[in-house]
Every structure is written in structure tokens, then in C-alpha cells.
Image 1 (cartoon, rainbow, N blue to C red):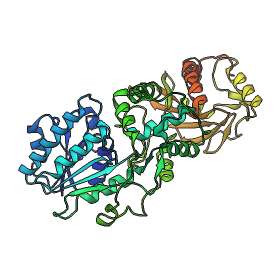
Image 2: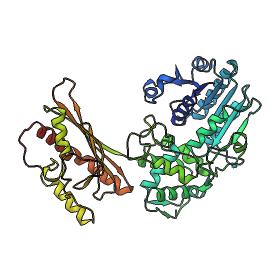
Image 3: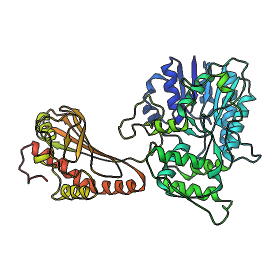
Image 4: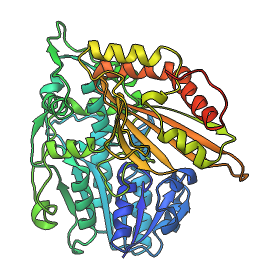
Length: 487
């Protein structure tokens, strides 16, 4: 079928469009930012319509000829998001009816039992009701926390768990929710496209686990291999402006803006649990059954330290997700030209370590190695294999070889003690002029806990002096320029 996706370059949208294309559907998307569209990886496989939801002509052009419309857009970061979302829903509903669309699918939020839900949840419910009252049969899928790298609600849990060792015992920590894996969300969205024409209703969607928000945080810490946080009583009641204050705290501790975090925090004031699970009968469960919270978190944590993330794994952060998705990663890189050719430069890269040294400032490697030994680590000096060419799994001093592509790149993983995972990649490229070459050096550190954040910042501060010197030394040695003995 032909599917028009609104919000196609957002967190869920990017993954849904990829799934629809894999199933050979024709897809049209509404686009405000062509640069973001280009980063999706599927930009040349879809029909892109420039415009936004405030432009009825653009929406009409998008849905023209569509069999189904999927609405995933929200204006949550704008103060007037309820009014904007309501107006957008009427625009989409009217345009879809005029175009003869046969199915409308919407992803919203679970409805709490409270008579006074947050503005965020009220707005989500209002949009669903607009679609259900329209002339096009609608399926409104309503979910709580979507678990996956890039999901704003999951990223808030990740960063609070990793960066707040002492949690105040605010009431919302005890409230229950029913998280759902992003892979399961995609299953239900695709399934909803094929519902019979007489189905016009809401569906609660969730995973198999009902957990408190405190349990979400504690399970994340356990699965990430981090120590459990401490919960302390709050001596005074939480003031009415508590969510706004918490939003500012979240903004300071995470990549999320307070405009986005505050509505999410306000929505934690109630239990968000499925009132019914008819979707398991009407659409059917995901292959293999619903994903547990633990399995969803493991998937979101998987291969975080091996860039780039596979494009076909919806649980991992992608290039279009907000900055900081997937957790904090510290990166530093440099490129150093050399008059030597690629073969000569690679010979120095492949021969690094052991007696040849690492081309860093005098004493740096020595101090690092001694410190590691004092902490019970392997130390900085263990030599290197006698053979010239390195292979995967080889140990070179305090590093282990992870990747070898002869005359292309060499990646090491540090085996010295650190609160996180440190990799060093050395790659060689021929100069575009046909003369000489370039060395690309990249350092990547995935921190663990607060100590890892401090260590990562220190690494970035010292990287230009240490690893910059390493790159210059390797490039110079390849050109047979006399150097001081490397340490």
C-alpha cells in the first residue's frame, strides 16, 4: 500500500519508514528539514513533501493517493503544544477524508485513571479523539514509556540512573507504568495498517511488565552493570512547581531540554498501565511474544561501544536521533598529513607498541601504566607479538587489537583499568593528490557511572597533547624524520 507518514524523521518515524520500505510499501513523508531527511539512509526511497502541519496544502499533497496515514508528530517542546497538536489533528483528519484514505493510525499515550491528567497526556488523548471522530477509520495506539535508545522517556531514565546516585523519594517514583520496546511498537503500527475498515477504536499497547518508575531505574542500573542508587526521604512536600524544577534539573543532567522534560515529568504523576490488551487479539503479539523490559534495555545497551550502530536495529541510537541518544560517548579525533605513501605509513601503524613505543610525550605512558598496576590492572607495558603484522586478539602493551584491515585501519581496546571502555583507532588514507598520505586517529570512550563522566572529561582535555602528539609522531616516523625515542 501507499503510506503517508507524518513525523517520519522523528524517533519512531525513522524506524517505521525503514520497516515499511522493507515490506515493499510506497512511502511519502512530510519534511521540514532536508538535512535531517538525508541522514535517515532511506531519503532516496521515499516521496518527500516539503512543509509542516500548519500548512494544509502541504498535508493535502502528502496524503493525496495514500491508502493509509500514520501520524507520529508532536509539538511537545513548544509551550502551546496542546493547541498546535489539536489543530494539526483536524488538518490531517480533514485532508485524509478528502483524499479517500482508507486507514489512519496514530501513536499516543496511555490514559490514566486520574480525572485531572497532565497537559501532555490530555493532549495525546484529545488528538486520538479527533481522529476517532473523523470520517476515516482510525486506530489510536496508546503507549507509556517506549524503551529504546533515542526515545526521550527512555533517555531520561538512562541519564537519571547513570548520573543521580542519590534519588529523592518523590511520590512519582512509586507510580507504575507498563513500558514497551520500540520493536513491539513498530509491530503494532504496521499491523494497524491492515485492520478491517470497521475497526475504529483505541488500543492500549504495552510490554508484559508492570513496574514502578523506581524499579525501571534500578533494573537499568543492574543491566548496565552500575551500582544501585540510594533513595532518601524528602523532608517537605513536593511544591506545586516541582515538575518545572525537576525539568531544570533534568536539563542540567541530561541532553533533554526542560521544555521536553517538564511535560514528561508531569505525566509521571499517575499510574500508566494498560486497561485492556485487545491488541494482542486484534493485531496479534510480536513474533516471539512481547519484549520484556529487561530484554528491551539490553537491546538498547547493545553494541553501544561499537560505532556505527546497525541501521536495521531499532533499539539502537541512529544518526537522526537527538544529541546524546544512546548515552554519553566522549570522542576526539585528528588527521595528520604525511609525505610518506600509504604502505610506509601503515608499516609504522602496524609496528606500534613494544620497543617501537607509542609516540606520546615523555613519561605519559609510564605514569599511566604504573597507575594502572597500582590499581591492580595489567599495566602499560606487556610488549607485542614477535611477528610484524598484527592480528585480531593480539595484545600490545596495555591494549588489545579489536579490528585489523591491512593498510586501512587498526583499532585497539584499552585493557587498563578505567570507568568505561576506551578504544583507539588508527587509519591511513592516500592523499587525493596522489602524493603522500593521511593518518586519522580517533579516540572513543564510553563512560560507566559518574566516575566515567569525570574520566571522560579529563580524557578530552588531555587528548590534544597526548594523542595529537601520537598522530604527529607516527606521521613523522613514516617520513623517516628523526625523532626522539618514543616512550
